[in-house]
Image 1 (cartoon, rainbow, N blue to C red):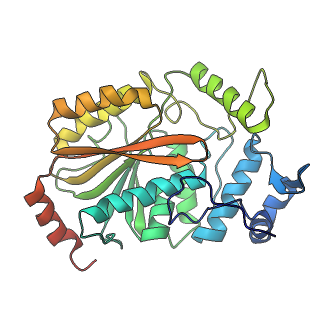
Image 2: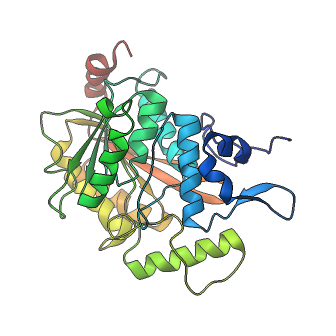
Length: 318
């Protein structure tokens, strides 16, 4: 079978270039096979608007490419698209490399904090599998924590390298789960980007129409998601502004703070908050997945001398 051209814009190190090899994936995880069918063009595909099919695909991808033997989430929880999440990890690795003579710091000595890690635990899984990083994930929802712990318990290779911390204060992001004496090389975050459940549902209807070409009146969130995962008061912009305000408190204990920004119109207010907070520098990294564009905003409070010291004491020998 001929190889399809790479998906436009995926990071060069992303393993998910081109069409999914569904035959390979179904052989790796037979639970995917019932969801695979041949479309009118003679190509193997699956119904990407069906949450069970998407979950089965994720499970097979994680098993085939990231050595994850067990992965499952209950109905209604966010089921993330693996290629896009892997892109974030790769671009974040490049960000660290630019401060390390072009070499990506790897191994368990690199500590990454995942804000709102969720039941799916996807960033810790990918970051640990690809670069060997140690992860600390915060989460507010007790149900999500239990599901994430089950994933860790059933994947002994992940257990020593991933910790989950419960955030008990719904008004805080870092305070209470990060300690002043700790050092983190990287913060990653996929913030809830809708302002309400209604807005999230409308977004899902648009997504189903784009995937199937059909207009529907009701739609299951095909990638799942619930309050705290997909929506919060003030939406993405307010969550990130709060994140920036709180990052000031931990300005000396983190090298790069980063977050996904789904909506381009939010960048202006985010930049204003970064300037107001007095960061040493910030930058925006564009990511493309087919016709979809997103971006990472990164900021640091460290000056050049502090960066050099950080590199010397934390990354030397990496």
